[in-house]
Length: 82
Image 1: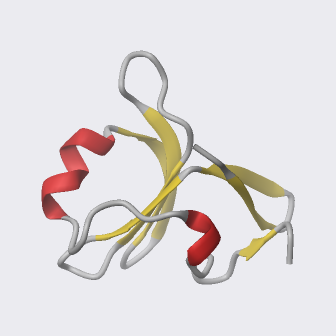
Image 2: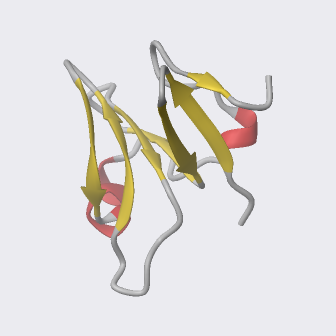
Image 3: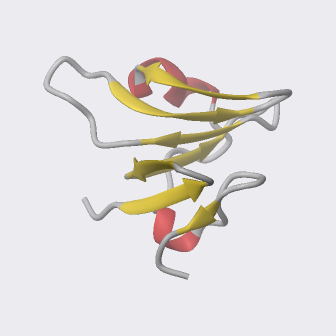
């Protein structure tokens, strides 16, 4: 899958998957590691960086995972290629 870098100040994360949960929280997930985890950003009431399991999040998404090339960045972040 193609990835896109998202930046806020000096922090850069690689984003491969983007999803919006039914509660409105946005998930920006990096490449999935062999153990199924990935590093990413959750943007809900607050923004938080950390590891997540996309397989645990998928059932709570409105329409599955999307391509970051077709999505806006998280609130307060920007895409490196724009």
